[in-house]
Amino acid sequence: MATWARRCRSLALRAAGLGFVTFVAVSAPVDETGRSAVGDFPAPAIPSETLGLTVLPDGWPAPAPAPAPIPAPVPTPHLTNAHEADIWKLVWNACERYDCTGDAPLIYDVLWEESRLHPEVKSPCGRYLGMAQFKPSTFDASVKRMQQLGLLPRNIDFSPYQPEHAIEVMAWMWSQGYENHWGPYRRVARRFGRTVLAENRPN
Image (tube, rainbow, N blue to C red; front, side, top):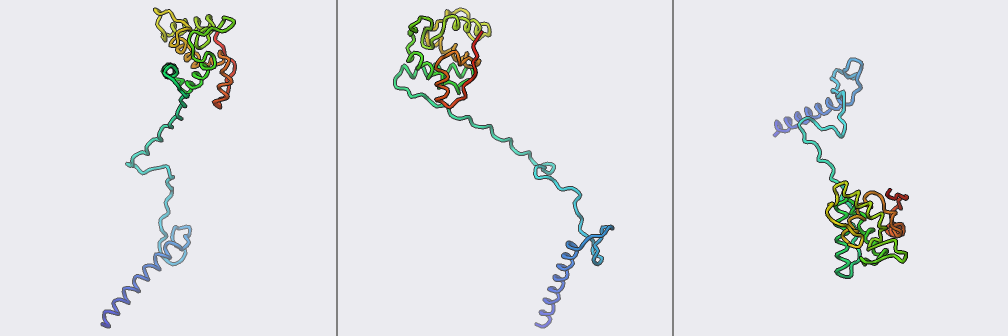
């Protein structure tokens, strides 16, 4: 039993000695030769360069790219009947073609304020026609330009009284920055919390 106790004390002393050596080796100051200034214990090696947090060791997989931001949902107008739903569908589809779906609710509201979505409307002065209240000269010039760009066929007679024609041309004009062609635009834009664009009329 006494022999076992002596062995235990011997192991404990050896462990304590190793702990002291490690403490001195790590904490002792280093002289200009790279050795510990206290005793003959070698100083621990100090890495010459520390990797940054964004540097991965060779062979590690690269981090996955950040996900694309999710666009904010486009508000849907309050639709009360089939005709309104049909007009909204025409507006949305046209805006999809010209990459301006964020403007679709504004276009719909402008149409509502211009004509209450009635396709045969003519202004009291007779200068503005159809659901989108186009001036004939503006409508014809826009159709011609869209045909030149290959956006509309040339074998169809387009009319501002046809909702699908008027909405197609209107969505393209909005995608080109011609929102100010419509009088209610500024009021509708403010209602949606949008920054009102400067005047920009087609030539």
